Amino acid sequence: MTSDPAPVRAYGGWRRSRSIGLLGLGPTATMALLGSFAALVLIAAVSFRVLLYVAPPMVLGWAAGVIRIGGVPLALLAVQHLRWRHGVRAGYTTYRAEVVQRLTGEFTLPGTLAATELLSAEDGCGGRYGLVRDRHTGHLTASLRVASVSTWLADTEDADRWVANWAAWLASLGYLPALRWVTVIVETAPDPGSTLTSQVAAALDPAAPRAAIEIMDQLVASAPAAAADVRTWVGITFDPRAFPAQPRDLSAAVTEVGQALPGLESALSTCGVTVLGRARAADIAGMVRVAFDPVVRGQVSRLLAMGVSPALEDKLNWSSAGPAGAEERWDCYRHDSGTSVSWAWREAPRQAVTSDVLARLLGPGAFPKRVSLQYRPLPAAAAAAALDSEVRAAEFRREYHRRTRRDVTARDMHDHARARQAADEEARGAGVSLLGLYVTVTVTDPAHLSHAVADTEAAADVSKIRLQRLYRSQAAGFTVTLPCGICLPELAHRLHH
Image (cartoon, rainbow, N blue to C red):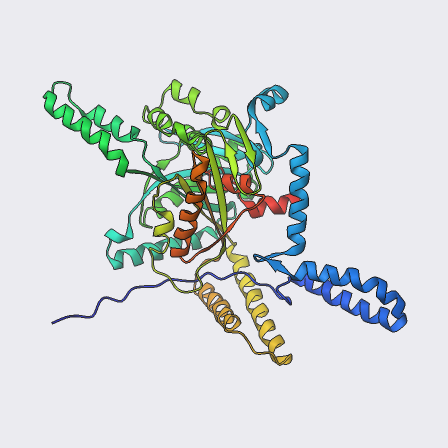
């Protein structure tokens, strides 16, 4: 006798945010389009000769705003290209540590990390942990080191419970006004062998038989070829100004962050991960150092295995974490011993997926890789209003198609149903987050870059994710996959204002 296989649980719940507008434009752009069209009608009624001079520039402006290449408006691509050309001519895409040190008197990190500093704070239990502070905004980012449990080795019921607890954990973030975003970073790389070598060397008994020691040495020498170094980080970024106590100085802000972390840590442990502890300042500096100079991964791993010592703090700090030199190109980022390529996702999976949908993308490969999932929770009080606005936008598009006698596409029908579903789930207690995904792959030999790019994009296709290469923004994409609290949408909003 045979039995039917157990049903596979599928998950979904993400959709692209779409506001009220025509032709994929937002409300402001739509009003500008309609206003310019009305202006053309009035000009045509007054003077047709004037219309001949005014109409061509307006039509070109419409085309630049409506025509999209790779999902990006043509006007935005033109602005990005002009900014890139200006940055290259001004030397903003090149970094040399000795030049910066000579001008400022100290070493700083390049690009978006230049305004950050690394702090070390007491955890209240006799230990210390690291905090990355953005000097421009005052944001503080603490990182938790976690070890995840593979869903391939777990029962379906356990995986369902972990997913449900993770959803509940994300929903709870909407009730913490000081929490700005959470970044989950999964770093994978071929193990250089230093971790296994150190562990075996510490466990070997010098009085053991010579034959046994030789066998262990042979096993250590052959194991790294099939081993991988996998590390998972959960970065939590706070805005101290939003704490109820309203801390007046940095010391008080660090204290508020330390009081908020224990509750988040204990709840996170029910989501299928084991919380190993808060990352030390040296851990954060070490990861940043390895990202910029991947050939020192083994050396940094050995230093971190030493534990707390003066040598560790001296060798792994914020001044030594950055590269000696870096150069951003329009399609890649060159830094010390590595060359990196970064992507952001263009579209999440349209269909419901299983709990291991990201396994191929997150899994280790032949090249060092970092995958970053960034959650920006909406405040609980604003989530309902945001989803109601999304539902009204979907209703507007459906009514527009009906009145213009155009057939509603299957994608619009599906999007309308998902908008209503999201509003219904929020009414039942679900949280609402703005989600972004970023990927960075690094090679030490530029000749292998095309192979690494093809392998990463193929892994994303298997995970049903469409990636978009961050052309002319490679340096920023590189830093968002580090536990430093960088958020590209927030950074873009700050630069535009």
